[in-house]
Length: 211
Ligand SMILES: Nc1ncnc2c1ncn2[C@@H]1O[C@H](COP(=O)(O)OP(=O)(O)O)[C@@H](O)[C@H]1O
Ligand SMILES: Nc1ccn([C@@H]2O[C@H](COP(=O)(O)O)[C@@H](O)[C@H]2O)c(=O)n1
Image (cartoon, rainbow, N blue to C red; front, side, top):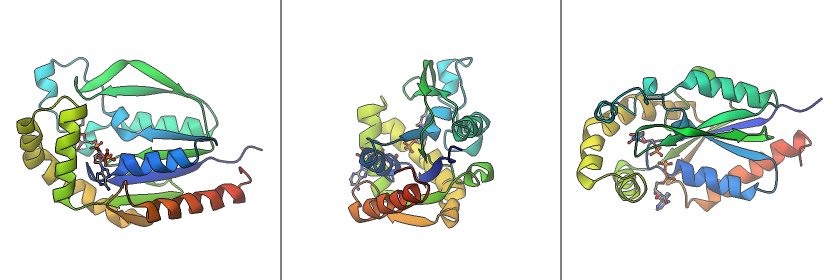
């Protein structure tokens, strides 16, 4: 009988380096059977709202996410079924009309600011990581990234950070650190932590005879 895929959760604040850590692990196993699921792609669809209304959404609150759909998709992948993964457009603040068909794989890396906040998601994870980076570094990284990649202005990034991102981080994201099995300082360039994770995943895969 086919083995249950391994689910690894990578949580942490915005700009902490979650995506970089996830990509580094993904790159290592690329020749094998591995996929990435981004919680951001499961922001609730807002295509029915005018653009001006979408700007007012609190994107750092647990209710901004369609975790029911995310959960359903993970359950399907665990049953070795494919999913229609949504694609998110940060410039339009809603889902794109496109989807990606994702085939089931032996390792699933689930990444997102609030994946450890939902008990149902936590219960599906074999390993829970929290990328822990100081707030000053996170805002600097986010500022550069959001201007370069997400179509934002300096003023909008700062305004959103002070009024929404920072308070929501303190209220909802930071407290989930206590659920983590491993806390990774600094994120994407922490090669020691990434190597340790790769070794651990390799061991699990060997035990399950995937490798
Ligand atoms: N250790 C690091 N040092 C410097 N920059 C980093 C580091 N880790 C990530 N970055 C950069 O910071 C930005 C945010 O990182 P990312 O991995 O997207 O964070 P997150 O997914 O947690 O928001 C990206 O532009 C990334 O290249
Ligand atoms: N339309 C949106 C959707 C999300 N955000 C911000 O993205 C952050 C989460 O993504 P990371 O890659 O940084 O973890 C979150 O803090 C939201 O504020 C947004 O600005 N606009």
